[in-house]
Length: 253
Ligand SMILES: [Zn+2]
Image (cartoon, rainbow, N blue to C red):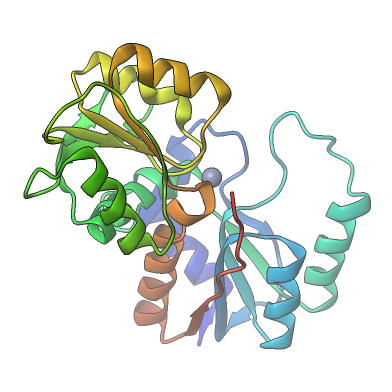
């Protein structure tokens, strides 16, 4: 059991949300009751996750994808009204961390994804003055491009879409970024990587892979972002003695 404000203060120190320029507010997005005992974590604060949290009598929900995204209609109507109404009526807080949770060096999505995939981290690829979103490193054993696809599928429980690049025997250097992140493929190719892994693919990603020669793996936006929020929820549970459950609301994208 902990107070909501103690949890928010702890996350302010751990994730430093004020240091980020993001597409959404990071932190407490919807305020529920002041005490937290049951915490539910999930990738996205969709209605299914909220309904499950109500069912489990949660006091707070922790997500990577919350609400109030830049450019969206700020009105609380329709789908957004139903979600927020359900949270408020049940006294459930919503805590959401986007970029601060992607890049954190312990509980971040990219580090947690590397751990899940057995990638050794060697560094990050700089993208202007922005935060270091893309990590690079290697998979011990330097697999073939096909073996890497199989490995990713086995570890993540879902086969990735592999767009072959240049014919190579082994993948020696690879870069990755959780979430959509297909736009960083050229950054990875320019840095001399043999392969790049992200969540979502676009039509043009195929041509970039073919023409730069980099092997590309689309492993799923949801799948690649399951691990950071789980690690963060587990950490909060240990720190504050909370009852924590990660709920995987499946998403094929
Ligand atoms: Zn995302």
